[in-house]
Length: 331
Image (cartoon, rainbow, N blue to C red):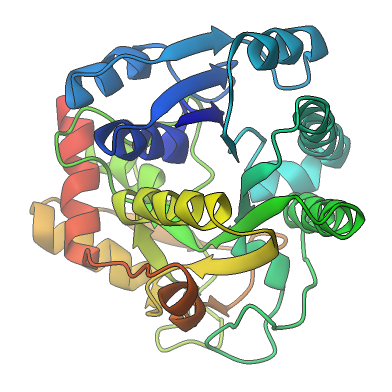
């Protein structure tokens, strides 16, 4: 069974590739290293003791896509490639609309041409916007508060239209909550090239004294300590959810969406305090203004993924903090 992984050198893509290789899938990967590192490829091979086919390039490159699909008998595509920073999307919306939408359309057109109609799409809990009630179910109202989330929702709608137009498509939309942590080997994890947009890599840059302090965006939200509450899921658990989604699309048709989270919400300060306790490091922080597009609370009802995909996260927030820091110490 051969799987094409777009954006496979990224944070979630690399961990998913490890789980796929360990489950004896053949992997073809494409990545342009816009927010990842070439060293990740060798680290995946060290962890798994397995090789895979890699193409350096962009999913928007139609010639490269044609080469990949013509040279490989692809069974399933897992589509990670895309820009993902909420704050950046607010400042540069056109960059996000062009890249995220166009790359997905190019990919789906090529899949259709080569009759590869099984897709696992990397979506996000940002499609729920400001939730009406918690925990969030898959049938909750869909709305967005930032351009990044809007690109994900627009792609979801494109994929739904595609599935309606041709019932032989089988598509799993995975709505991630907040992936953190790293592989237990310490070889792969999250280490953005620039100043981080996400909380955990920001915490780690403070822990390693690369940055003086952590900025916490607002402490006046309607939460137990005033800081934003999120559903954090260990990236290895999330990766295993992709295996379950692959199994699902291989044996069914149609389209469905699944929350991938733990079902538990932790605040920014909960995460900071747990990180300090587990790793015995100090994280100086200061409270600054809220960030545009952020919401107070967001955590999943994960019962549908448990029922339909037989997926359930098992790792704790302590595991997430320990593994994340272990990766940085080994980097």
